[in-house]
Image (cartoon, rainbow over the protein chains, first blue to last red):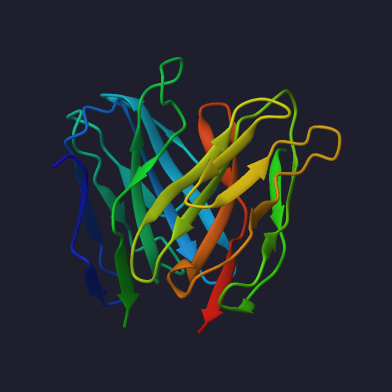
Length: 116
Length: 110
């Protein structure tokens, strides 16, 4: 079955540690996205990538980093510079702009990060 | 910049009641509009979409009409079920990415 796999589902981190959240898709989508979800604030875009080896900052990129070395993978690193990292993180993918299905996002099940 | 505003939740209804969740937007140009649904503990799923003015999106008994004159895309369902309990997000396109509203939690009681 095609879809997006995020791991781990739950992650605990001590302050000052970097953590990396995995996102893998087998939908052959060009575009991938990372969103952060906090209660009452909806989804906020962290980073997105329209094509391999290219990515852009979203609205709240500070304290995060990404890479896009392969089409199917878009890992997110939450660095120690992120002041309030406890949140639910959602990865998504879509067809590229200008094609059928562009902007129709398929989401993973999410990763919940808690900083202790 | 572009933005989406949804009615605040939580919304609590009895089974078979009518549902309306308001969504208004601010955008330059002519964005596509979407409703996504998030069931407990899961990611979001596309519920319906509309790509131009006066289009009506529909799915699973839910409907929403793209109203350019009122910049709205309200979600409606004539008879809700307990299984509709979820968080609903309105969204629009902007420069190759989606902008989401803050979400509206719906709780349907038997």
